[in-house]
Length: 361
Image 1 (cartoon, rainbow, N blue to C red):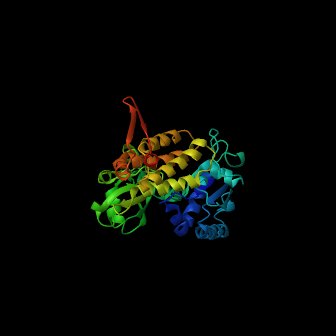
Image 2: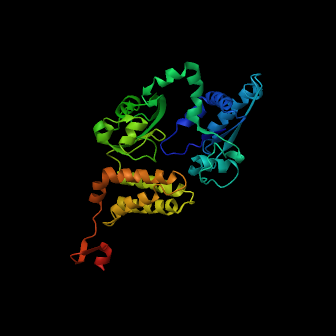
Image 3: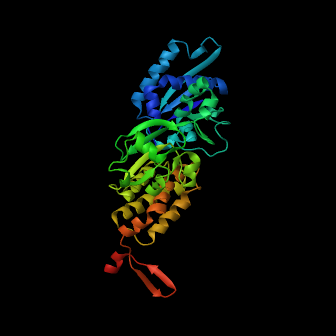
């Protein structure tokens, strides 16, 4: 059994709070889950930068061992269960489940080709389940209050609660646990103190961490925060990291910064991702500076489509989707900023493009 605490998605810090403030709840969830899946060993893979949180978790694990809540013959039930902490080294890609397993085994953190899936061939070749910190930490509460209680929260087909991490241009950045399906506007206004400069100053919101396509202000007025509602708007809930962007920010530069992050974190195993994400970043940098050529807007969308669905893991999609969201909702802003090269025509049927600096020569 493996717990993924390698929380590295920009705009997301929900697992950090659980590790920091409720480590015993995670340990209890691990114990219950281990019995359910017949696993006697649990590895908790913690992001390397979460050193203090890992230390707090280790203290809680030691306390659990002292009270004989875990270990050999846990709670005198005859059930043996041990927990081990493993620190990552700062690689975002190790948040992908099979790359995480590779890292645990002491190998380079690169995703595996699936199948076989970890449930069949996982850590050290053994069947392995991999879950997020938030998923396992909520198990004790569900068992204590009952599944009907948990299912009564949220919306049909989108039940339960979610920890939302609200950051960016808000008056009160925070983490808050709310029901699935809460309106995005309510989430921002009630829990985060509203947008800096007022709701009318809102430009866009990234609803689920940096890998999800952004939503323009018009959509944010009515959208609800659940899987189905966001998919209908060609976005996604992702990690529920809500990043608010107001009109004081340069939206193109924001997306260029995100593309730079993904370029840096690509493991380089797949050519479409290794080469394509770099192309996206360089084109977005030119667009942010107003130096892009006329054909680069359509070329940028084409590059995202060449990455999407052509890689071993979902990292490529996570890098391409935010760029697609920018082009979908703010294409006119890109076109307005960039003084595109004039269209030169040899004859009426064969148009071609020449950059302005070539014409100046």
